[in-house]
Image (cartoon, rainbow, N blue to C red):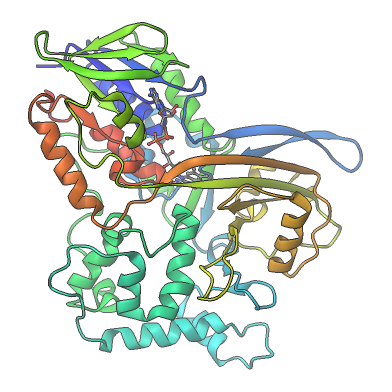
Length: 497
Ligand SMILES: Cc1cc2nc3c(=O)[nH]c(=O)nc-3n(C[C@H](O)[C@H](O)[C@H](O)COP(=O)(O)OP(=O)(O)OC[C@H]3O[C@@H](n4cnc5c(N)ncnc54)[C@H](O)[C@@H]3O)c2cc1C
């Protein structure tokens, strides 16, 4: 039987996806979604800002302070693109384009950016070129020696472990230099965190699985096709892709002409047309309890209204959920993961004639410093002008847009521009526009043992007093990518009817 009423806490992408799918699956069930901020979408912040070009013409640039690109491997987002009719505003970057293939690292002491070889051919070229050649890259040497040796390393996963950090995993298979240079850079780029703390099974399950498939060798494992799909399709709910998956063939990443905010706006537009959905923006839940006498959840709110529902979905950060529960009915592990903070700095420059301010490519990352060296506050920088220039059409040739990510607030913008200039090996001019946004505690760091802890949490939710009627989902549970969040929303309440 369908639930009589559902309360959803949190109107980020997880909560909005849950509301969208639950309202379609249970069209007669009353759904109330509460979101603390007036702005729905959580960390998604896509904004157009006015700028004045050289000759006085006015235009706008799209600035993203949260997620900016999506990967086509998430079928649940492709499904939303189809169902919400977002195909006309898709902007894609093909895998073969320089914007996808050219990715860089900035290493202290190295002059300018170092190209990460993206194919066996570019790897060989970078290693065989003389040191004075621009094609030569020290990264090629680290990569080649690590990858060539890996299949010959014995199966060295200790039999007693169920999980380990990304750094421990990569060090075991590829050596500590590879783990520090490549592994730490990737983790800083996605999680703004330290690869020595992040769970490899929670963050990169395909690595753990490939090691098993390859009987100890990751390289061999990746050469053997996996039998299990990355995300198993729910038997009774095939994805409604409407051909969007075909459009995504050969695509590396994508966004929309008005940025990721377009996905949020399309979800809101759809939800506002549904008679069974009530969206409460700027209203936070202040307490959540199960009334066993009425078999209903009672959610007190900042607007003094008490929302009652037979079923509930929590899509708020786990520490926020902890604050809502009574000490008599605690849930385990809600504060096991710390949250990283990221300062996002959008920079727009007037393009100097005939001058590129950055190489064509996706952007660069900054690995963890070698021991004894000071850590760089800059985590990386995205070259939006290369990857998403169409967001600025028809003025894209006249401006250069890039976004720096830092793990702490910016002390001085001129000093930041100086550091970026050193890393790029190019003297950056004064920017036309700078926008700084401090995203405090925005990305959960899924610590080693995360999957085990989440299994324990879901075991407790199946028992009394919750009886499977409360679902706890979101970036801190099932993974931080937008795809993980939308998928979690799609799966919410699957056992309720
Ligand atoms: C800077 C940055 C860049 C990123 N880049 C990418 C990217 O390029 N690609 C990608 O795939 N992912 C990216 N991510 C990750 C992804 O954007 C997030 O993991 C995802 O948006 C989280 O969604 P969520 O709904 O689970 O949580 P949130 O976005 O945190 O939403 C939670 C919501 O709950 C509400 N809330 C909190 N407490 C209460 C309460 N008590 N009552 C009611 N409501 C409450 C909040 O107002 C908020 O709207 C990025 C994240 C950040 C921060």
